[in-house]
Length: 253
Image 1 (cartoon, rainbow, N blue to C red):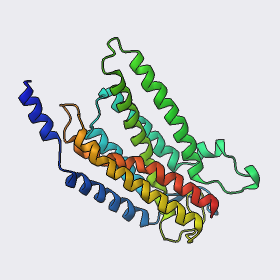
Image 2 (image 1 turned 180 degrees about the vertical axis):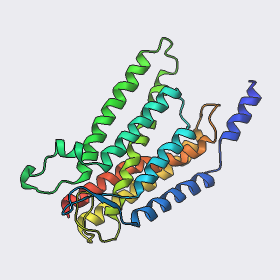
Image 3 (image 1 turned 120 degrees about the vertical axis):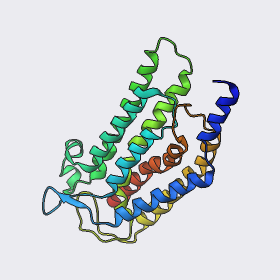
Image 4 (image 1 turned 45 degrees about the vertical axis):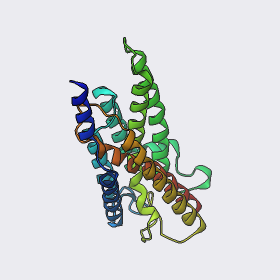
């Protein structure tokens, strides 16, 4: 491929920031709409676990980032990130891991929050992601572009893992739901106000960063519409912000 052909491919892969912003807005609208729908309860009838329908959007974003991937970390890197993202979804929608680490009754508390299990899972997944990514790079015979490959693999994995945090968006919205392992009765409190304001500021900051990510991106020439993946990156990473804000809100309410 000649230099002019490479330039043409690179230009075709990029899109205006207006399109990137439109994808982000659409993603946020879908997440909020799904969070407003009453979730599915399971487990103990008195204190059931609640799984929000935003889990569908979390999985969809993982799939879309895998298809419209802007990273240069190879097929193996994409697979590692997808697996990590799906495991994060499992941690966000089940109570088994969380109950093993945070047993009911610990600290005179009789309620287990699903956010606890997810945060524990995220911590373990991030450690494994870094170890596996580093080990994978060290196993390469030809370690060209080592820093780029390692950073791309880690950033992609963080985005996939963070996507599951949107499963807890319903706890931050002004809706009333029964007190349970994943949600709480809505009330305007100092903790809610602070968590929502901080979350919004961080989400906006990540969206602003995507302007430079889109402008300076250098995706794999084989990637199809990688700008879609770039648009989803701040949305998915923001899931970590939402998950932490949700946990802070339920424990301080």
